[in-house]
Image (cartoon, rainbow, N blue to C red; front, top):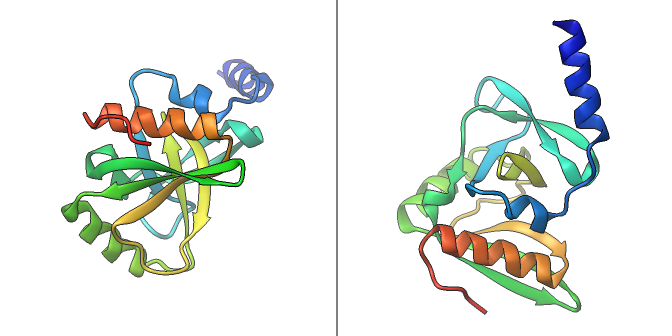
Length: 157
């Protein structure tokens, strides 16, 4: 048992770093927002953060999923890009309530069960949420397109 755990740990530690576009290429596609650490929503588990070759303790309960997304968009910023999602009205209300109650806490964004970003909630969030910040334009476009396809939306510019 211990040998198997050590083998798994070494295999995970030695795997190559993945980019957001590589993570997003996996099928099926999932998008989740989960609180970081204990104390917000009970039990946690370790989720890989391939870009930093580490793990993040995230809550087992999910704050927001792909079902709460209306559309995804890319915002270009001088050669770098951000990916934002616009939430459905119901998801927007729930997201606003939970983020208002947890200002100062960290929220992880997971794509296909891998952490792609961790942010500290500084104010109540509502209709718009970030997915990725300051990534290459091609990676941002791939992520936004995949979110929109998963939600049955046409690609957006």
